Image (cartoon, rainbow, N blue to C red; front, side):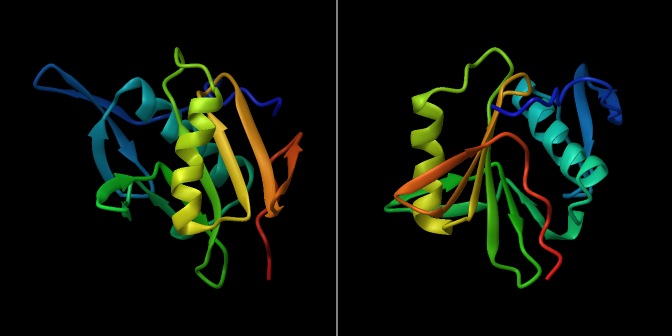
Length: 149
């Protein structure tokens, strides 16, 4: 398990409008409803961009993909410099534990986008894996550095 507290010392732009809270998404460049899951999603994005120096232009949030006849939305994908999917992140609200169900949900998306790294987080608990050698999966102690090449 990763030893990072994504929700600590997080500086987000938040506003109230019509009795609803919104947070500014630095990737989508728009205000989105500030739910507990969105809090975690934004915490991950800010951590990747501000702390890990991942380029925000290579991050996609909540894009629709087809899973059989179903339309699904992944939480976060980070692309490498060749614009190929590189890291897939599944976010949960802080009160929802990271579990086997979280992994199964991530694996549904993985079957379509095929990323080298996986990240699952509820903001309190974060788990990252190197999935480049499936069926062998290496659970990592820290997030990978963004590839320079």
